[in-house]
Image (cartoon, rainbow, N blue to C red):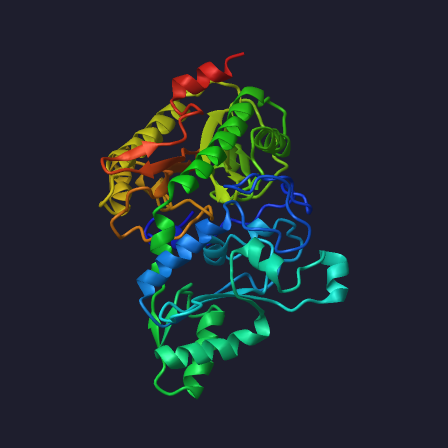
Length: 448
């Protein structure tokens, strides 16, 4: 989560990538028109949709660009220890190509060209590394068929081809990401700078919002995947509330949740699961596992399953023994009222900050304003903290979280309630209704 007064929303840092949820050898996965096991050799195929979906997205982006050229890089390297390529691929590259098993790749778009307008560049093959990492395909018809690109080259050709095409068009689109002054210069800007130094008259224009705006407004097929991720997440939280026991450790409860994810269609974690008990429930990004759940504790579970590249993000706070104390119930009801106020404030055309303001008024009126110190929520999609500007009018079919909280470490507990919402023309649809959030309904579910 982010500081409540910075309103960075989807530009916030992403939660750490999860380990161990997806095996090295990808399981059979169904996608639009391409069901069956993954093919041998990489890139294996586009995922989770067929190549025409990604061609359609690239065509839409090129129409927005109008002319010039644009380069989008994949992840430059696989983070050490991360076995799941879906957790490390650059999201913009994945959104436009569907390729999730190639690091060191790049996409070149040239919308003003009369012939070929899109090119895929892959890093060179290396026989030694392929002994460890698996065989990568040679350029040719099979690679073109799998990726949906008519022109596939090795990455060594990217600078020269980009320079040549930019020289003809006179313009290079910086498609993002925008980073902080202390971060490394994005690879595309570094390339553009070298080209501009050697090609007088070629200019760089800021088009960093183009892909972001496309990604914020979810396609129906994306929403379907998010709903599947939500369903798996709900199953995990239901299992947690029904199976939690005094004396259990946080790690044991986390295992119950994540096993339910797998059993209900989850193919990974959207982020590292948070299971916190007692005082730790007042720590926003708690990363412990060894706490022992005690009688009278509040338990906070902030979790999200990952399905087909898309994440869910739901938080539930509940009493370990199945019964809220009077104080816990009072704080819980205030947080729930704040969440409902945030939902009522949202609809297409309204900025997300309207929900933040509405929720803060409820919590401030309760006298707990100083105990709510983060932003109300964020966008959700390929990344659990997906791209989006909380200050801009929300488009129809954006997906956001609303997650107010009150944190009272001096009282030994915190409460956060988080759900996923689909922005509609007339309001915000509560998507994650499959796990109770009303205090009485939680107590009824946990009764034993």
